[in-house]
Length: 568
Ligand code: WTA
Image 1 (cartoon, rainbow, N blue to C red):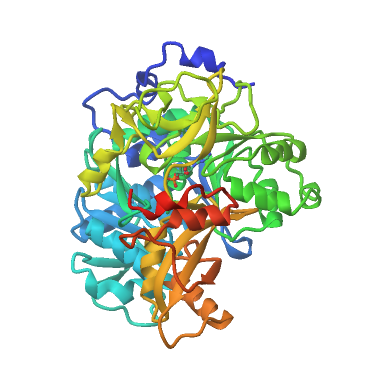
Image 2 (image 1 turned 180 degrees about the vertical axis):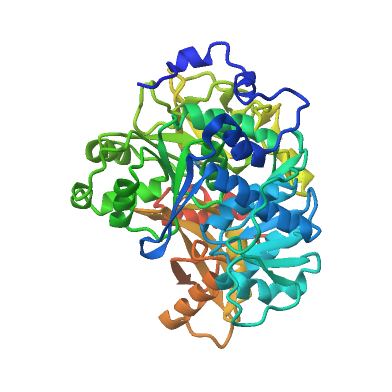
């Protein structure tokens, strides 16, 4: 049982000012997440406490205290400021999970610039669309990723600097490229942090939709108010915890709860910059005595697939609390985790746009395996009738999730895309685009997304982006991309293509096309299967009917196709 109290107690008289008071924040004050995550913790007497335990390939380990991360973020911030980067400029972090990514993120916030983290496995095309939309001023990256930036740099006149954090002096740097070494730079102890306010922009995360280009979700420094309190209550972070969030800061979980949540609470967190393997993960937990673990259903299902034996080889009794996010957490995974770890993974639901957890299970609440939990205190969550957009009162009836706007971490806009932003609000509700029902005790039961976005292993992939990239391959005439069921990743990308004259359908070509997408977009967006077809199902006006292909993949009833063939 947690130290804070039951769900009902917390909901009663809940106000976000609870979080503001704990953070010593008053309306109108300067509010800078970079300061809150480092300087403030040092001022609270925890300068020598371990902030970050980092592990890379081959078990290489680095440890940093709160004072170390305060100085490191100052040092990077000062370097960026020295280059002429100013408040509200977008600075992209395009790196593996190396320490510079974490300190760079905080340093960018300290100079009032906007951190734009992008997943380091992104290919040049994925990078280009996101950097051009944001008109990014600088890219902080590593040697191993710089070639992808070079491929597109000529198309990005607004990019003034490409900062390489591990330059080894071997190959000459090119125009606009500059080396920075955290180890060699003079540590900056005293730093003038830019006086951002609650509504100053902080982070820009890109998320994929069904149509159009990815959208830049703009967050502000005030998001801290939700992120701090949800990390404290839902992740149940306490003074002596060793916390491990497995998410990459290229995605929102990796920043909201892989950087901001735990650091603002002055808790020690671990980062593992090594690919997935069950044994490596268990070893990591045992070695660092991880107590709180925030992960994702695909990872849990992958662990489950490896069986109980590997679990038994390690002493995982340190684990106190487990939570999950990103995709439906099936009841089997909850039950399995309870059996093997002695603790059930508690599900949390939220999205890039919400910035912080919205529907959660937390310690002290009754857990119903398979349910996402209840609305976090301070969040008004409903399911809406899909025709009237009025809240459904009948328990168990499925509708669209709706949130009453106004929680601190809510996105403030889609970057330069007001129209799409506005379309997310109907009848005074923010509509995240997911379907669910609510039972008679207020528990939410997720049933699916309301669009064609593919959620593969907790990562959102836009079919539109993959289809467009496929068309750039010389063999492909037309394409349609849908989700295909997968035991571990829940969904994977499947492409249907018709070929241009002169190209023969073959396994070799399939592999070539897959690789083409992997390089251009990312391994996540790469189709796991390509099916050659002679024609694609279309409406009379020529629109491809993804829905039909999707239904076939999932063995669902297609219904009356004659209406589908008409444009609706
Ligand atoms: C899905 C990740 C079921 C949902 C933080 C949402 C979930 C999208 C859950 C957001 C969950 C997230 N159960 N589905 N517990 N959590 N989702 O923006 O479709 O990368 O809209 O944010 O993931 O993904 P995003």
